[in-house]
Image (cartoon, rainbow, N blue to C red; front, side, top):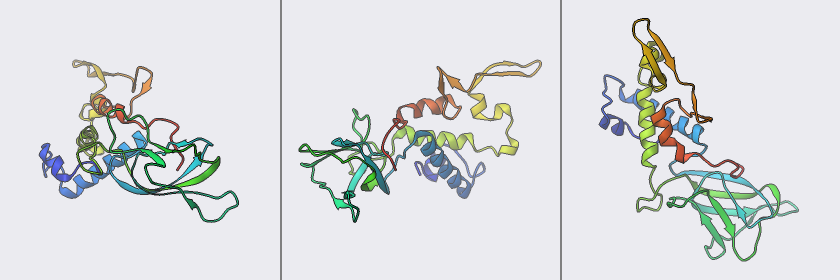
Length: 220
């Protein structure tokens, strides 16, 4: 979860609008929405991944590693995975907390070694998540992700059965013309510049744009 009930209250969401239980549910749903839209997550989570060896020194896991606990390779003849070194002198890790030049996560064997080709033949276990540096080993959820979470919650405060066209922030963000005399409303199409809009809310989409997972990363 990328924001707390206290965060939401600090932004002015009152108990009259949503009690703690409903607010917590909205925050959890907003986090799931962002995970699905962006392709990875923004807090530490323990996971195990099976990655495809490509006959190259490097692999790109689907999520930045925060802490790599185990890296192992399936032997060609079968059997238990054989451990690979985690020593930084033998394995270079590009992960999180991310630095300003971050483009994608990467695990690279040093010394001319390569990951043999295979389907899911590399096992990687540890703690994973896209976080930003804050002076701690695990970093923090990016501020833009936290704000987008809270904006999604605000957008969803009105029960679906009560929302009208202009009561819905998603729709309201795409209004380009309103004729009050005959109630005509014109909406912009749900994409800009040929790129699909993730949520339909321009403010949220601007916040999310830098955090989309690059295509073609890893295999879970």
